[in-house]
Amino acid sequence: MRASEPYWVENVLKALRMKSYLFVSVSRRAMEAKNELNLSLLYDGSFSLDKSLVVYMKYMGEVYEAALKPLLILTDGGEKVLVDTGIGELPESHSRLFPVKRKADETLKAQLMKHGLKPSDINIVINTHLHFDHCGNNKLFKNARFVVQKDELNYAYQPERFQQAAYIREFFDVKGLNYETVRGRFQVCENVTLIPTPGHTVGHQSVLVKGDNARNYVYCGDAAPIRENLERRNIPGILYNAHKALESIDRLRRIKDAVYIYSHDNQQTFASSL
Ligand SMILES: [Zn+2]
Image 1 (spheres, rainbow, N blue to C red):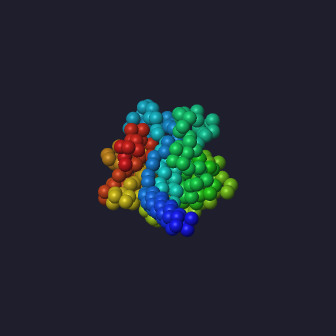
Image 2: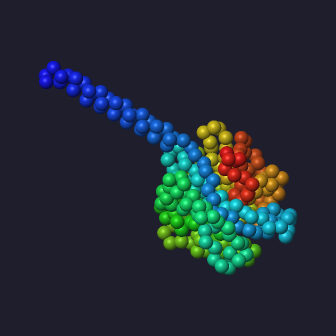
Image 3: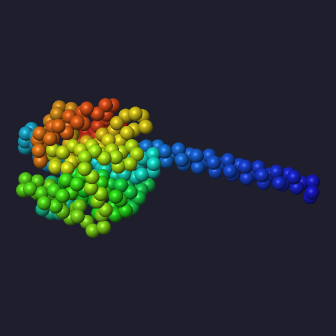
């Protein structure tokens, strides 16, 4: 027995060494995974509207099926950020004018689940603005800090007649939601900065994500809902201020090494944009 003891001890030590080696390599891998910045476009179906509301004074009478594309950002620092929350369930007054199409796996909950997340895992929500097609699911994110421009939140409670139909109070005015209002350019967390882009609404903001590959990913929001708005400098059809809308498009166009993501473009998919 004594003679075999060293063997036994050696085997245990070997096993322990193996285990600790495994532990180190797994935790290193976990750390590496955590350190990877990740962007994913989610879907909340689509809604139909006259295309002249997407591009100012063009395409009148043409119906556009606008994709609803919240952006999920998982940052180096472990933040789980969602940009916009889709259209949710429209009241009849609106769904009659803007019919929504959505497959079973295109609810925001189902989309998050594909990434192994629950709504309660999201700790930051950025609303580019508070039109109903961008904050329809805000109520799902009670654990999140909502970052919105102060002017936008104030205006949403009392929109002028020409913007009234675009705001649905029960979508954003939800008990228990934690709104942090900001003014102008603002760094939300490492990698993620808000850029004020008013014009479509009074307090619209776009989102700049600094990629690990030195590229700047720009979620335009409705400053440029489709590619044409940005590439041809055609302002959106729904406006608070046309002059500012064009200035905002130009502000986005000046960003170097940019990859633009358009909030309603039904041609641009994740694969083609990132
Ligand atoms: Zn929109």
